[in-house]
Length: 148
Length: 148
DNA sequence: ATCGCTGCAAAAATTTTGCAGGTAA
DNA sequence: TTACCTGCAAAATTTTTGCAGCGAT
Image (cartoon, rainbow over the protein chains, first blue to last red):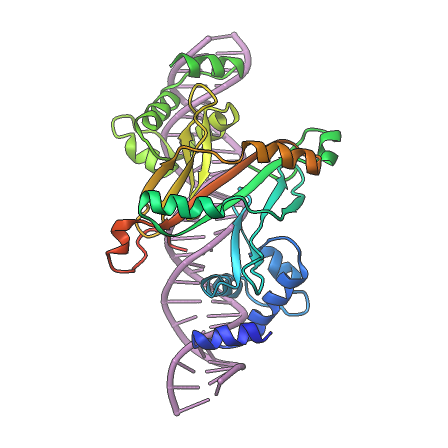
């Protein structure tokens, strides 16, 4: 947990219970979580939803978590690993919400090419894949996950 | 406007003023619009925001518009061209909201590879690039666009 | 002791829904 | 005529903010 301490100190912010708890929850979880899911996962350590939202903004600014969008109207967050090697994407089932982690990233060179071509700096990308998983292909076609 | 008529008929839906107006607005606009922006653009043809939201769901289901996410908490929509050749992505400035259209799509083959490898069908993707445009690099570093 | 943080409550922003009347087919 | 649509209003969801008191450094 020293990574958290160091970064918080750099921003003159404090090491608090909610922030430690949130990171512990995200570390245990393999897939991105919404703020409400984080709240629900914090069974023993109850804290306010507003605190979680505030913490996620801070952690995002400190580059400790990444905001992920699965297209259902709720922001999700996942831990960013220590090295820069944790960048990855997801393949999400639009019926049941199952998530497969996609290790490869195909767009590193393209980012810098786009930056040069368009005069942009600090180019990043957000990429997610969507489809129907094998289990849901065998089930009734009622959307269970994506409300939109 | 026969494309709209045909598809609406196929879904036993009706050709109405709001629906035609929305498509006209999107056709004139080169970049994705939020529902509120569509409302504002419909100066002469006032219609309710709820109607626009309902229309966007329908048009999305009929594959006439595509939902795009620029990560600021509001859904945006853009027209899908007649052929399937209109698939593209965007490079968005996180300071001023400027949008550059990226013609190429790099992920066609990867989609089918991921589908096969993970037992998914109907695999699609959402990809957007973010960065700081050349004008904003010369201006004060106050975020004007991305509220998050 | 200071400055930041939390919980609570209220508010804001986006999106969805119920309903009564109106309209396309 | 029938089924669909719209506007209005209310509600639901997600996220943000103000404030008073508490807590980390």
